[in-house]
Image: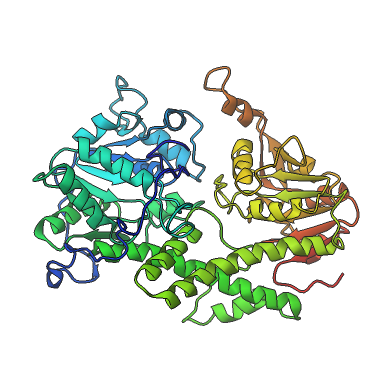
Length: 562
């Protein structure tokens, strides 16, 4: 999105130079009275509920702002929660039946709490609807007791720190509005993923713009996994709140915590200083990504030997010191978080003169990039280095299942490599991604790509796979599994009821788009063309069952004998 403080924005229009970066210097306020604030506190004392909080504002109506605001509104019916964004189209989507974010359970949640008009009245049997979406940021900021910063913070792609540093353009733009319109005493909460030291930077910005006006700045990072964000929000394993080590900072943390304790047990709320909170977010993602790159490095060894990566992962995962999480080999990690946060962590280490630490973490990203390149080149080698005249079908474009998010798509990088070999067609099917989002992401890695040329996007997997010489499973959608005994269901949404204007493109798309529980692999295999290859980039398929259909299967982390 092009909106300045839209959380989903990928625009980058101004530099964030090291001279003004918060990366190098620790927060002076955080270190002021460190003895009064333990590094981590488990189970804060009981919080008074909603300490004078009547209005909450989220800046940024994206993947973080919208779902978080909806859950907060659900559990705090006496609090008005307003989400503002400068993109009127995105705000209109949040008000419509077609939300801009696909998350299981989100549609029903938003409908339950969304206030569709100021004049709307509720019957006595209904809960008060208290979630508002608007573009009126000045009005919303002026009355908000707590302001959540949920804007996009992408990697800076120009100037000093290009490819590593965080681009703070959208964040800084939103903060200028906060400094202008926020009422005295408002609590500013970092929800966006930001470089360490940003809270101190925000405090200085507010002090310069509104000298003498009291504000408190907290760090409250999100720990959401797309595809399960609502579950992560409703049953979080922890809520992290970083504050200044001052009485007013502690009070602000307690005020924010009082909103969470409406549904989160107190012993899951952890308090730290803001530097620790900001760094913990980066480290959490880096550690998870490290496990993915580690097991993928082992999958490469397995493909050259007789070992099977799933068996190796199970064996080591049974060790309680290691555990089974994030040991599933595949194409690596995509999405808007892991690569960006590792780059930011490496840049922080480099800024502190820790070059060896920076290089260590950069290697995690390097291994991730090599994994998808290795997969694409494996496809090419199976065709003896010649894809000319061959049709390839791609199942899945989103970076993971149960989301329509195309950012940092693994499929885009695979397609980029395959296009260089000039196949006759690359057909793409994804159950949730919109065609315009797919093409937009593809153009970031293949600027000359055109849907009218080699790449075709389909809303029907059977049409996408028909007459294909090879099928690549790129996203771990449950719909793509071929588990024996699971009854395939594939029906068109003929009962869809249009509820918008007659010319609503989203309504037209939903009325013709199929929904699925499982695709019929026998039907797909029958309509393929020799040599009938299936490349399983997620270790998703039952290889033996699929080979009974007369196709050849190459699965990540397994040596293939064909």
